[in-house]
Length: 170
Image 1 (cartoon, rainbow, N blue to C red):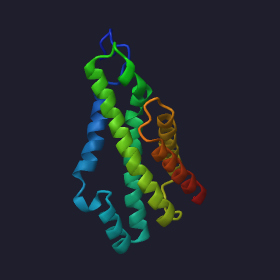
Image 2 (image 1 turned 135 degrees about the horizontal axis):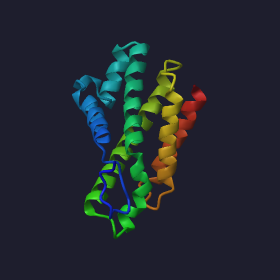
Image 3 (image 1 turned 180 degrees about the vertical axis):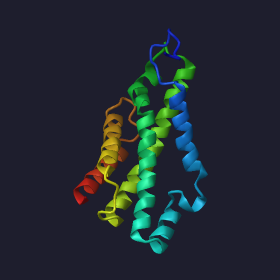
Image 4 (image 1 turned 90 degrees about the vertical axis):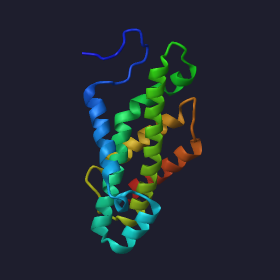
């Protein structure tokens, strides 16, 4: 049961469940009240006024969202080089891949920031599967660092260093 055209060389999921999950994840984040978005200002506010448990839940929720988006869209990473070099790929498919990559990079940037904060403020107040979320982010960063189109090798290295320090701290 495939929704792909037979002549496309590279395929991305276009099944309804995939689109629905993407829509639900985006909707969750977009529907949050402004004070619950992960921003520097909100972080300072929550560090000042929320207890450590509430701060940890807030951070864990956001890192889980970022890693869920990476898991959903990381298939695009396999086609990073193809977007720039392939000639047989449709423009529509290139756009989908680029959109998936942009989502992954944006979520990776945010997740790196969150893991950095969690390392410093959460102690052991983390969800049991936080190690898996760190692994998801690390595998994405490693894969991006070795693509021909390296967005920012220093950023990947910085992220991997933060994750290493985070894992050492827990």
